[in-house]
Image 1 (cartoon, one colour):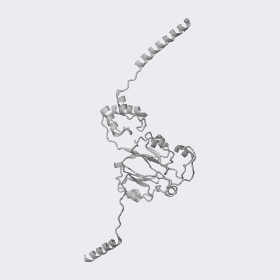
Image 2 (cartoon, rainbow, N blue to C red):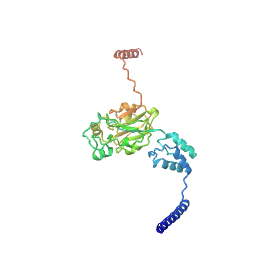
Image 3 (cartoon, rainbow, N blue to C red):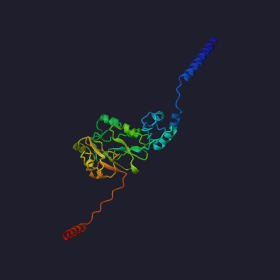
Length: 301
């Protein structure tokens, strides 16, 4: 009995001494956290998506406080919370924040089943990365969307799905927060964050194939062949041609849609634009009468 009592006393003493040592160490080596970090973290959406470039909302809050101490929040953005959340963050830190352009994820591929026929049948794990390791996927295109759904799994907001008819990933812009998770997970870099545009309107080359025209055309009917007609015809110099692929700079594009008409392959798409009004051709008789009138007026002159 005395042995047990001694053991209890010894353990109690060790525990008491240890607790005192830990208490003193905690007080001496304590690192005080800036209370503003907690305040900023409270207004963040707590999505922890990593779209801001930091490890979760807590990491972003700490980065914002540090940036405020350096005098500027330029370049800091919570893609999920958007402008309204950043204004709250700036208010807490006593800073001003510049207006940002809303962005949205865009799948730059139009290689549907009709445009890009299947040459093999893949029977394995439905994952883009696994398919890529196995080869080029089910089509001969080495650049387009694989349709494995890695982006769907990466999106925390349910903004992406695979269309069963086309086999391509599709983005629901109303749900998309531009966190960039889908961009990071796509092994072929098919998905891009682009400015949402006025009323959601934007001009996009829905192709990332960098093969030469003949090769690209062979594997996909809707591929960009790098002909350069769009770049030459753009009045705002918003289109560049690099590695056999046209790219539209959203900062320079004025949404005139001229490039859409010039593209012989239909690779350039006008997204969320109203349908064009059909051109009304005048009857041949009226055209002949106008020509006759013009000739008569010329003779009289």
